[in-house]
Length: 406
Image (cartoon, rainbow, N blue to C red; front, side):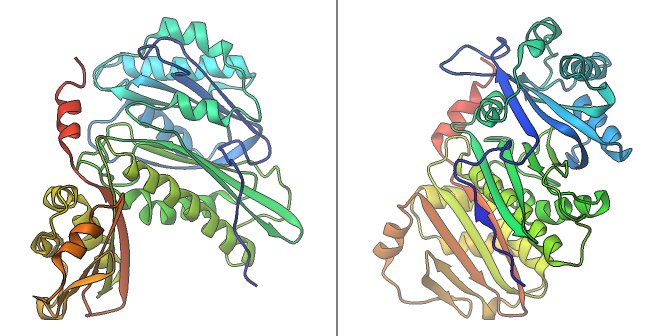
């Protein structure tokens, strides 16, 4: 039986039953129209939780704390997040403040601090202004329609919020998966990237929840690039509260397949929107590698191409320099046969059997002028397929990041 995954109109992280959220402006960031800088996601029912985190060897204490609490297998009720400072590289005070944030939020919500997770995002080397946390976290009102307020609260250099929800029915029970993310710069993941929160009212067994998130991250957040840098605070959390009712989802049946597909759909949407919203970006780049010896080879090669600075600048300049695409695939160090490679730009073939073919250069230049560019490389040595997403690299990125803290 095929289960239909349907989009939820105006879906947010609170579209799933039992979830509420909110945000507030405390003054951590500079003021602005409708700005927020502290947010909370709350579930009235306890949640099974899975997480993936930054593999940078310098990490925020918020990541260390969350990893420890997720690994216990204990149920959680809430996540509190601040934007504007990363709480990274601040010494022992970082962990003290991270724990204090969870206690302040927990007291406000009537739960325990061990049932509360925490994230921070912003400038590295800046401590959390705890006086503002103590004053403003207790003022956050969490509501069922507060997903949009939370989405604003976690933004840093993002130009837009990133939200989605989908649903599927199994045995007369509707299950919903909602998600929200932030990220625009320092994006080159090795687990996940940026901050992302996915919620579901499905009743999911914890082992399968972790398996599902790991698989979704591999095909979504791990396949995007903006600038080749991996954050110290990267976190993706998946929370399941079972509020929809229905049987336990634990793998091997139609409900489990539908849940896996729904989480992947949400994850890929959020990941692609991060790539599209890259700092200074004007174009989304989608790279598909087909015909590799394995799926892992194809994923590696597509990501190598999407992350290449020379490919990014060629796309920005509308330069059909396919040699850069070959270079980027080759530096992935996967087995291939150069004489079998075909290459396409927005479905216009420019290379066959490893050599340039006759094509209308102006047509390719025109194709590169759109706000989305599709690059396809067919290796023709196997059945593996992988997709990655990136964005062009522009002068605006350089100017913006040359004066990030000034």
